[in-house]
Image (cartoon, one colour):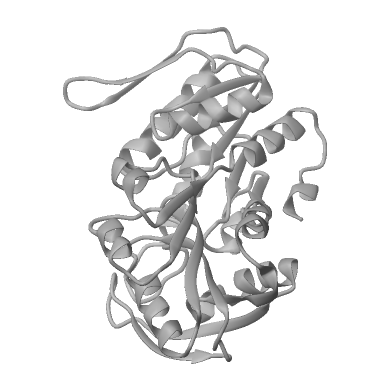
Length: 310
């Protein structure tokens, strides 16, 4: 087995390597003067099972190109099998045509990863499950829910917790987590007027007196979470927290969440936290390194990965 990391989230790659008790393969990923990506794998990978750890987070295009070029370098170095470990799969939000003359970039990126030479993909909480079908190679879509459940049990009295989906589209994800912890489910009915903005309409479910936990896969601008938290508190919720897999947190999201009524926002390290995230008083990061490390080990050993879903 060989583990290779790009520049997108080196700390996560190092944590995965530490879990596996295996050092990261020496690999140079740098830029020419015009910012063109150059890659050189500095160890022999011929006949090896290669795992390339690279979320396609901000700057998305740079990190996506790094991933593709590292895959190509490994393929041309005669790696036996190449697995793209993409904890956060960028461009996944464009998974269908919402209107005329729009792209389906999730399919485009899937094609690019395949054509670069990947033999399989390992990711966490795809924005839409059908993206697995955009690939003609195996895709293991892990869930962060087991990690979140462990953290919830440590920090909350589950007797009084109510899981809340911040929109109708996330009901399946929220229901699955609510079932894991034996909690009730509520839904925020939201209407989005334009990209990056949201308007909370009403709450489906009685949240009065409950500790509400908002569950979603991505937090970007933070507007939806902040509006949902205010609406839940207006309906009598005792407190509101959020557990989100991918902390994109673009623009002024961290400041918006810090000033919001959210008790805390818990995100995973699928995307490397910025300094603003690390110093924010109500944002906490939990690690998916062990989850990914175990999945990598089982893939290398040709053992079942599905047991990690539960």
